[in-house]
Length: 520
Image (cartoon, rainbow, N blue to C red; front, side, top):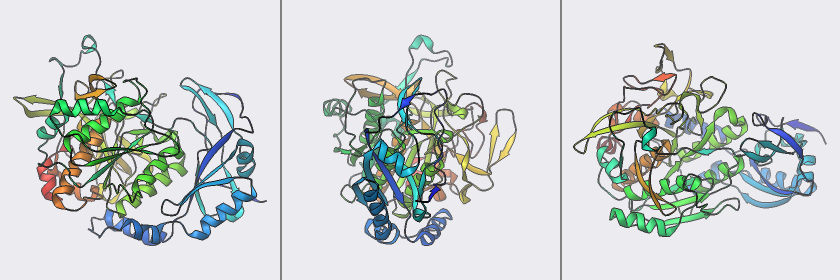
């Protein structure tokens, strides 16, 4: 059977990884196959209109599935090929355009012309492949992505715990911390509880304990929100007991959203930390007709250079679907500064924050005087302490709402944006001005841009509840209305410096809550 290369599927090994040996041909795995969407031209036109600032009516989930889901004939092609290859169809979802296949390593390697090896690297082991994936010739133009053959950890959580006091040198004053409602008050959030809204949280590991949530919200004298754990690709709410691990991310996300918008329902989608798991969690949340989230908060990501182009394109298309259905997506911009933690020099931005169809959230350090916001600067604790992500994408084109903008480097050079600039907005992220949270039975202080995505998500929950409609894709509205953000003009994240207006450290700035509420 003639085979063709799946464009954008090429993979390289994790730097420093070595081959331990071939995978057992009998080892079983599941793989997500993403097929093309119907009405591609109409969808592109709709998204372009939204990007230009046109306030279109949102598509219902049912209308989107009918007009832009998978064609049944395309799913049938995948099913036929799977049966011929000895693979089983585990799940089909037309709106998500996804077919999940199950089979052995031997069956998948034969079906897609690849080799799978057990790989070892400094962070552990994974099932890996290098090179591209090869498809049946009749799938040309039908299949957009095949994910899950390689199960390397795709993303990391973007939170930072506060360092011991003796290690803090940068600030002349002692560190402080805030409860999430205090941060919301400092940013002038409109009143409200977010009642009637659902905020989706994407989590790629760890879990939460209801007893911790009860204790935490009780201590704040806040009504505990309704929190529902949802399983994607067999992952579950699974607390590790390690507050420095993914439990810290899960609890931070729930507690920030829940403390600011306790009337909103919180749906937590747990998925494996793989490219397939990440995409499946996002598409599951976006097309969930039961919980029907109006806002997604994502605090996981990785440098663009660690992703395949097929995965980034597929996920960006999911965010386009969210925009078309009026769902706001808030994503942490990363905690590795302008390099995004990539060794070897050079600047990198974090994905999925670099998608032009999400609100990328950077980080600040904030100072208060007599419980009032006095000043903000770029969060940058140096190489060991973390710094807000930000910079210029090497993959995504310049969106129309960023045309004419420039980034300022710490060398004093002005760089006109030719590609997508990151972030869009920012908020308190420095662990030294961090958030009081409870993780695995311990009260602690956490920062990082992981806190900023749910901070903005909670703001939209309040705004949506008050307005009686979803804010949807907000970037094209925010950029011409800079007064909705508090400009941050001091500091840098490594190679990029803050400046008046948009910059590659804090975007347009931190939230000016009541102004944004009136704007939307």
